[in-house]
Length: 259
Image (tube, rainbow, N blue to C red; front, side, top):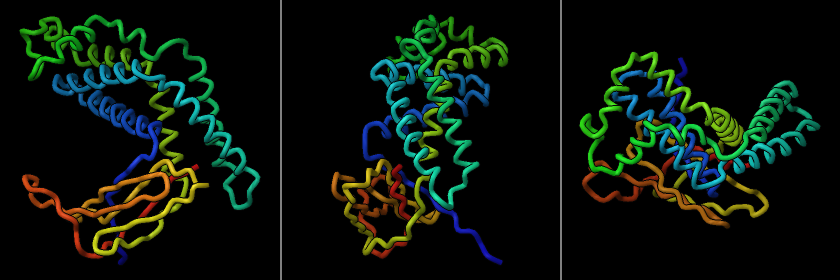
């Protein structure tokens, strides 16, 4: 009987746009997970996620960045449709999804989350968030009252406040999914825990993915430059001590994501 080897994957973005998308992806996942939980503790984290999204989108035009990346990927994938051995149905379905999200992003007027930004309760929580420690009941009785409302009511409010970010959530998910599946993994060896590879300047690598066997007692530290990148595998059995380089050969899977 064949056993399936499980892998754990580490990612390293090579540009600011993909770095921003990965941060957003984590916030979106965090919100959606805690929305499903429904309890007061998860409500705290769901609201923190919304406020972080508001801060994120107010500092940069992330809507435009997502639109540019979707359009770029769409144009590249359209050119693939003439190649042989391409699953035309799967590609057409992907192109339709991209086009739909492009149109939805283009239809958004003004800054993302403007209506959510003006929610009085969220604003009050943001103002108290700089206080060391958690926000206690005596800090914001109105928040304590909100937490006492039925779970269905609180969930409805959270969904309404998150609504302006749903298109961005779907866009970032699709962008990263296409990027992560843009090329096949290659099997590599890190000699004495170290690996280095030159980058083809004609190949715009956006994301490095390193997959190692799950439950390994080492992890990769990735350093990427314009012309090359290096991976140093480290071991840290005791978090109170400084990590050390793993000094044995390591087999791993490498994915240079580009599209």
